[in-house]
Image (cartoon, rainbow, N blue to C red; front, side, top):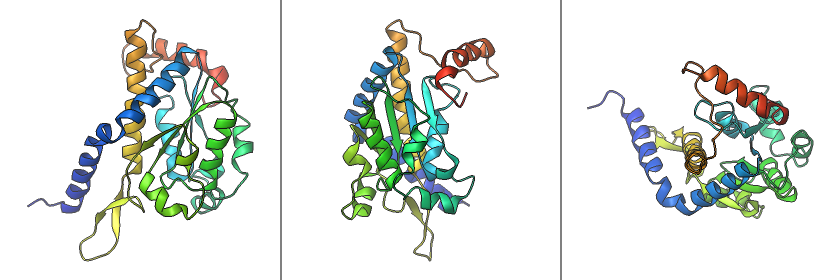
Length: 245
């Protein structure tokens, strides 16, 4: 018997869920890849926004070894967790907070906006998706359809606004693993599953660009041979349009 049964249960279910992503999201992954490939060929950008822990998805893609340099995180301390998690939870539910944040990022018709929200009903991500649509960008949501339907209670969902929905299939409450002798659950899955979905799409786009003779702007890990020269060139190319480089 394993000495870590709860850890094993979590990892087992997480592995099973990730294994089903292509079956569950195949069409959406293809559409998202098409949209981002089109943006890449037009020299557009892929902006990524989330609040609370969902903001980590924006940082996951940013300046990432093996990642694409045309990704731009949309970051504002008030909606994240490091400057005050409790306050951030309040702010992400407040209408009107996103517009001044987005004023820093000139999203346009050649761009893609990825909005990440597990529950998919808070004001900030819904308004972010709406602003993206108004700017002419293609909006991709990473969310839980089931959770958002449970939480909506008549409210507009992120999935209702987005052009393309990548469904992480997280349950209401996010956590999947029961603690024996308790009704409590641990082991949230929205972050690892969401990251897998996003990175799968970006990997697909990179491969398509390379196979067509277009050099995909891929960052190398800093300790890999040639990384300094390659990464410096990419930073010089995208820094004028990415305020976080």
